[in-house]
Each structure stands twice: as structure tokens, then as C-alpha cells.
Amino acid sequence: MPDIRTHAANLYQKSLSEKKFFEIESSGQTAYLNMLLLTAARNRVFIETILRQFIRRPVPRKNIFAFYALLLGSTELLFMNTPPHAAINGWVEAVKKQCDKFLGGMVNAVLRRISENRSDLLQQPRRFFPAEFLKILRQDYTPEQIAAMEQACFSEPPLAVSVKEAPEIWAQKLNGQPLSNNTLTIPAAGPVPSLPGYKEGAWWVQDFAASLGVTALVPCPGQKILDLCAAPGGKTAQLLNARAAVTALDCSQERLQTLRQNLTRLQFPLPEIICADAREWLQSAPKESFDAVLLDAPCSATGIFRRHPEILAFKTLNDVRRQTELQQQILTAAAPVIKHGGTLIYCVCSIAKDEGEKQITRFLKAHPEFCISPLTEREINSFHDGRLSSLLTAEGFIRTLPSMLPEFGGVDSFFIARLQKA
Ligand SMILES: C[S@@+](CC[C@H](N)C(=O)[O-])C[C@H]1O[C@@H](n2cnc3c(N)ncnc32)[C@H](O)[C@@H]1O
Image 1 (cartoon, rainbow, N blue to C red):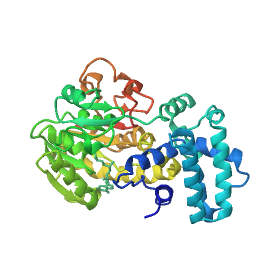
Image 2 (image 1 turned 30 degrees about the vertical axis):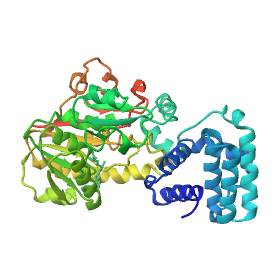
Image 3 (image 1 turned 45 degrees about the horizontal axis):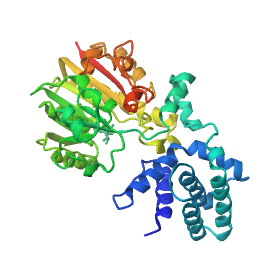
Image 4 (image 1 turned 180 degrees about the horizontal axis):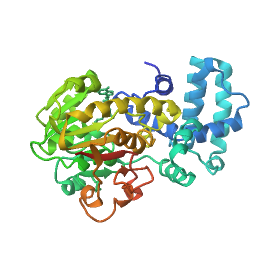
């Protein structure tokens, strides 16, 4: 097993080369690794600007480990409480082992200067979004909106959970704040499995914005609902909590296994579970057989950069384009299985309007049998106090942005549309 810092650098490198979320295994060091990697990803653009002030030439590709040592070492020195000598020595030793003595010396010199100039460096302007990600945002948002999102994203968001019932009681037990419906936000929560109610299955982790798709559906007991793209089951759990008759479909066997585990922990009876490509399965499914379809579509995941800042480094407009096509195919295939008068909920955790607002506009043009069923504040807010009005668009869609609901630590970016079949 490599030392903890080498391990952290390898995890960072793996996430970027495979274009995946950080995969941090459970161990005694999970909290440190989480803090180090997520803080580095959140501040990467800022740290790279600082590093350019101290290094004349970029680190060569074949010694990329030294780059990660500089990024993660700077993170420890600027944003974490690691004693400077421990951070610098730890990274220098790791670089000497993984690269060579010369690069170890370079990392030593740069990290020392960062440590000496810490307070001045922290006064420099901080940017959050890298250039490629800004291209996605600039397609749909004004500079003011982008600046507001940027400011909302520098600090770690609170944990958000959906509780089965009694949100006020669980808010007390978990030191949380009830947001609306059954969502609580919990600042500085600590390791999730050790929190009260986790083992008994009283709640599950889910951002407030993610929960709104099912809120918009208003599920009833016995209602026949097809949960398309269901794994790992956050929304399936909400549907089962409302005692709907659920069919949960996903194309990933592995993710469906996680769905089973999650629903079992939550003590819900397992619904009908189907492993298939939604497009193929829907071709042979009986027409007009569901009261409602919830399509939480595969998407670029560009709306969840608050909780997964690592994606900022590898998501591009190409990801948006690729997913848009797949979403359109699943939407088209889903239309016939909904009963007349039935509901289609379409949601994506993408910030790009091509996957959200524009996707639905195109769908409605091609499917005149569907119309928008506009969402209202009263329907999505159990407190009926107007706090969620900014989440609704003029058309009656939901579009959340990280800069919204700052009093609750912000929300992920989701798009949700409710359509009705004539
Ligand atoms: C946004 S996630 C769903 C999250 C889930 N609804 C929840 O609330 O926990 C999208 C899911 O779509 C699945 N998926 C991707 N392409 C698919 C396809 N062609 N058919 C069915 N499922 C697909 C992925 O495996 C992934 O689990």
C-alpha cells in the first residue's frame, strides 16, 4: 500500500484519466482523503494560477505525479490544517520515490514559497470554473449568473438527506434544518453510516433538487409508475415511500445491485426490477400501461459540480451533445407506454439547457399529444411560504442553480418538467 499522499495523487489521476468521480474506499483515512481531494478539485483553477507564478515551465507529462504533488501539497498548505513541514516533507518524499530527486527539489522549493506567502496568496482573486466548463455555462447563462454560481461553490455543501417521515423529529436528531417536503440539510455531518437513523433506514442521502422530480409527480398509493433509469434508487425510494406500484428499470446490473442494497437498508419491499436498455425494453412494452413515467435521464452530470468538483476538469460540450441524443431516444420510446391523461416527469442533473429546457421544447414539438403541466410553488413547497418561487421558470418547469437557496447551503442544478398526455 503506498503512503497516503501517493495514494491521494493516484486517486486524483485515476479520476481524471477515466473521467469518473473520485472513488475513495472506506478506511481510517477516508475523511482526510475526501477533504484533500474535494478541496483540491474545488480550488484547482485558483491553485494552478498560483503555481504558474512559481514554476516557469509546466511539469512534463511523464512526471505528472509531480504536478499532482504540487496541486495537493498546495491544497494542504493553503486550505487545510496540516502543519507545513509535514505537508512539504510528505510530498517531497513521495515525488522523490515516484519521479526523481531533481523534481523532489523543485516541489520542495515551490511548496516552501507557497507556505511562506500563504496569506498574500489567499488574497488573490479566486476563479472556480475552468475554460472548457465555462463554454458549457456561457451557452445558457449570463456572466452575472455564472459569477453567482462561482461564489456559491467554494465552500463544501451541507449533507442533504430525504427522510421517510417526521422531518422535524429527524432534524433534531441529526442537528439538521428542514428545507421542504422531506429534505433536511445537515452541515458538518461527519461519516454518513455513523449518523443516527442510517442503519435503521430512516433516511437516505439525496440533494433537495434531486428529490423534486418525485415531488412534482405527486405519487399516490397503488399508482402504476415506471421509474426509468432508476439506479441507485434515490427516487425509487421516494416513490415506494408514497406506496406507489413501481417498476424500476436501469441498464446497469451493478448499479441495480446498489439500488437493491439501498432499498433493503431502507426496509422497503423490493419493487419489480428490470435490467435493460430503456430504449429496447420500451419498444416491446405494452402501450398505455403506466399512469406515470419518471425519466431521470442519463445526462452530462454538469449540474452536480458542487458535490463533485472533480468533474469540472473533464466535462466538455461534447458530453452534453452525446447525452442529448440518448435522452431524446429514451423520451421518444417512453411516450407510448403512458396512459392517456397520464404524467411524464423528465429530469436531469445537467446545467445545460440543451439537456433540459431545449430537450423538452423539441419533444413537445414532435409529440403534440403532450403538453406542459405547469408546476406551482404550493405543489413543491410543503411550507407554502414562497421560499421556492425562484426555482420555477415562467413555463412552469423547475430549474435549480447552485446559487439558489443560499440559506440552506445551495442546491445542485437540476431541470424538471412535468408533462401530461392528452
Ligand atoms: C441520473 S442516473 C439515475 C439516478 C436515479 N434515478 C436515482 O434517483 O438514484 C441515470 C441512470 O441511467 C442509467 N442509464 C443510462 N443509459 C441507460 C439506458 N439506455 N437505459 C436504461 N438506463 C440507462 C444509468 O445506469 C444510471 O443509473
